[in-house]
Amino acid sequence: MRQGQSLVATFETVTPIFCAGAEQNGPAEPRAFSFRGNLRWFYRALDYGFKKSEGAIFGATSSGQAHASRISLVVMEPEGGWESKRYHDELPPKEAMQRGECYLGYTFYLKPNYRYAVPPGKKFQVMLVPTWDMPDEKRVLQAWVASLWLLGTLGGIGSRCRRGFGTCALVKLEAGDHWPIIAPINAQTPEDWLQKFKEGFAQMREWFPYGWKKGEFHHQVLPKDVSPLVSGQGFRDWKDALRDIGNKYRQFRNRYRSQKDKIASLGLPLTSRSRGDTLIPKGGEDVSERSASRLWIRVLKLGEMYYPMVWHCEGPLIPPNTTVVWKKTRQPEKVEEGLRLIYEFFGDLRKMGYK
Image (cartoon, rainbow, N blue to C red; front, side):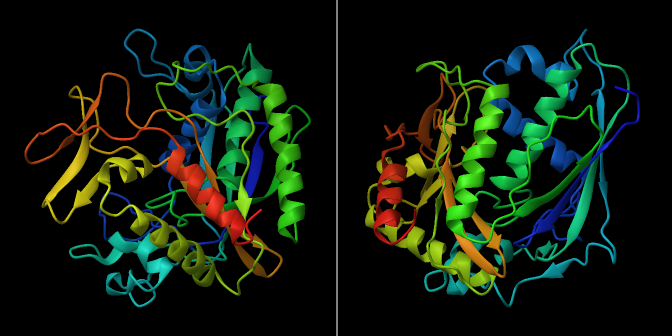
């Protein structure tokens, strides 16, 4: 590929993106490192052989093997700027038990948080530019395109992106002939969206076949066939869509409210008010006190309507050689680590018109 032959991806924000810089309560602005980190996550979740290829694709920092990425990523500011906005009136924490969108975004305005977000309806572009020749060009470009497509179709950026915020839909891809392309989804109905998603994901699996075996999961991965569920009912704006799925999710969690060993499978940390303590993962020094949920909530904009959508990852709740303990007492807790509760939640949603 000729150096400088770029790919340009156009995104549109669908729900507020809470992505501050060094100052948590400062202006919101999607940055290149946020995009790169999210793209890298999706690549690791997609490609069984990521350990051999990741450094060549995204760059490496390991001692003796450090080198920059062969692709430069640039986030271009939209016309009119990012227009940071606060949503404290729309997302008051005190309304979390009545309004699903407040439940899903509960932490944004808990003191001392007072967060800014990029509002919905902003179109912006991300440019990928090859910086030097690549001996394994085809594989590298497929990895970047697949990761972009997944981010703009299933993922999000910023805080609470697994709970419906930070959704930015991929709406257009422009590139030279050397770039492989998976068409962005342009759909007007849930049925049309699901069919086009199935076709796009099948193309991706031709590039990156599923190779995981039980017991090999050391992190979250994409299932062989990702099967999203989309609400059969559309809503007039993103808040109503998040209210619907947020209320359903809150009601489901309340069913297991007293069974922390089970509800822990939906993500950690998990606070128990009755104990005045919090369940966290415990392992080596590099083990985080957080374990991201394998359940993703997202909003689709189809035509002029907004539809809640859910999907899930596979993989362990916590890394190998890690336990779950109560943070204050350090008492270990045996928790349910499988996907049973997610499957049960999806079963409930199907009965309520999701498909």
